[in-house]
Length: 140
Image 1: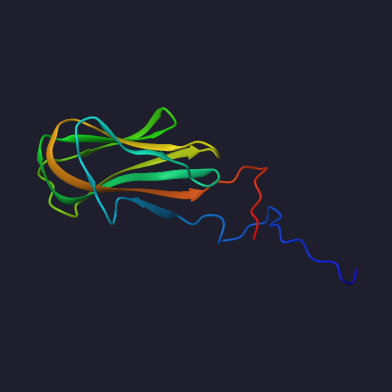
Image 2 (image 1 turned 30 degrees about the horizontal axis):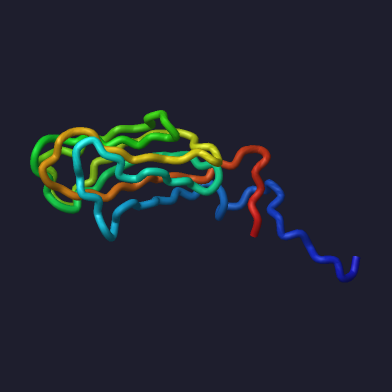
């Protein structure tokens, strides 16, 4: 039909730019989080669409003093992974944990710390990939 515009919708066909690409989201990379006892560092992060979280990690920005601190990643209210930040870690050392957890559309991620820490600052990251369900369509 002449003059009819083509649909700009993806029709559930495979496309490398939409599927299978691992992305990394950093929290506190430019301004690292200062560690403290039992506190929420990232209150709510809402990823766009359903994603599969592949790993969670922490990078030390400054040498930490005091005791070890446990950092946890939770989806809504359930813990997905915990990483222990050691007191003797040198700056820019990374500790990470592999996981393979689905985060459905509308759910959120929370990062908390537990333990007593005298000093230290860190950045966090999650590695993830899009995981669309059967009813999910991307728009261009």
